[in-house]
Image (cartoon, rainbow, N blue to C red; front, side):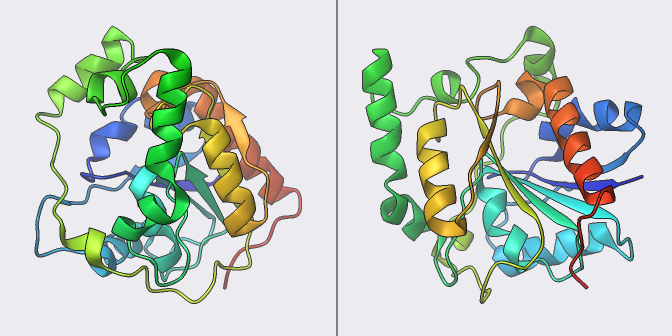
Length: 234
């Protein structure tokens, strides 16, 4: 049995994972959705990593799944994990801030180019870029969670304090229909920064809500890879 520790993106709401958790449990795994009050300006990247460390506890058979801005938390986690899955994630270089990442990677230009090619406005819009492929059930989950948290400015100015990505299996999983971080952009960044090829899955930026069963299948397959010869970070 694998424990999946699920790190949300900007805002830090655990509700993002509400449909994925039962899907993983039905496949015989455990899942913990981490909630981080990222609207609190007193908290920053080191605090986010500490909260994730607490969620991991003493478990060793852990797959850390980091969504979107959660990619900046993943390499700062101190507890041992067996695998990191970067899901539609920002992939930082050591010492880079989240604010710098957008310019350094050309994320905004990639989004606007994809919008232009699809005949969409280049202006960011949450409904267009985040909610476009969500079912009524998924939208109800978000509504029940309350208003989205607006992330504080604090972490965007903080460097991601790590020396190198750990020598464990790392997967980059890109939503084929992600309009915020287009899949082609994610593949380029994964190759440039980690030297690996990104996997792809149907769904947009909030794929854990739009395709929870498909995502659970993919994560379970990653856990099976570990059981068949992967190794963890001690």
